[in-house]
Length: 213
Image (cartoon, rainbow, N blue to C red):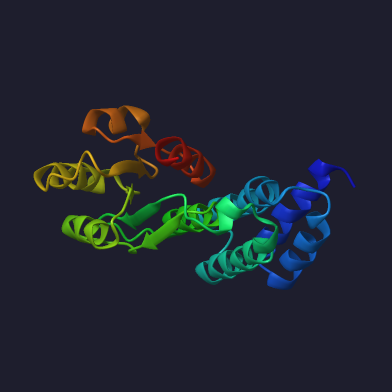
């Protein structure tokens, strides 16, 4: 089996939402691929597809939760093979949430799972989160970054609000800000002074590494 076929099998296993299937394919991939490849180019690709299928109404919330659980199990099965830095010391502390007025949760949950898999310490504070809660949580856990998701044009302003409150609290220089969600763009991120914009979970991991490592 080629590397590409094995990566596709990993992705398909996640899409199947079956933990046993995922664990079996991860076991098969262990001797062929690096743990980082298994996670980022296999499991994560499948998880992103699950998110897309959910948005299109092809999968439902229980499927997404099962897929996320299966991915977490797959990542856990690779822990012993991770470089010391990936499983020992955390790469950084990230608070991640969806802004107030917005109840979309799936994309943000996938990003949180992916960031955790990559070695970040992630505090997912959920959806419909008041601006001040982002700041309070960041203070509580001494966060290096805040991830702010907004899936509706009407809630985009909440991302701007978090950045403005960080400035008021004198924390803007200490905490990086990542924005994402369907209506968000790089131009919007630039306009409100965010440190980065991520279009999907894989990109979120790459951007977080760029900024925090």
